[in-house]
View 1: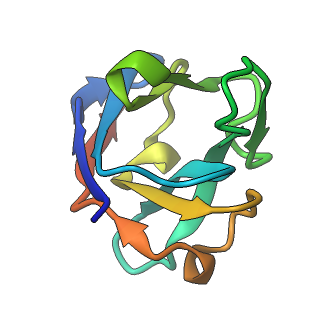
View 2: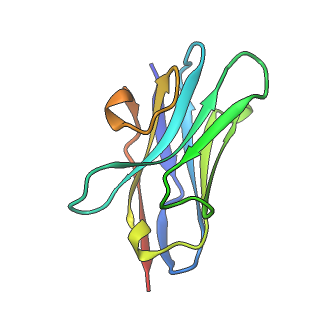
Length: 128
């Protein structure tokens, strides 16, 4: 059974940085996608970034980003630690949300209903 645990959230001022981590336990067979979503108060959950892995011993991977975070956020994965990261730079007040890690087999698409595995989330608050 796949379990995901996020950490690294907190409060930061505008322009600051945070790095979120998502530790995964339980194996996912074959190709899989790990992703970050976020949900602000009163808003729908939206996709932020995804990381696609072939899981065949090669180093190939592919990333995608929401337009709102391109150039500011970077998603990465440490396969040895089964951990997904989200480096967030130049944070804005509109980035304030609860950030969730999610996982699915197969290809990546930032559509929340495609993901069967979710963490509990970590809160990010950006103040001016």
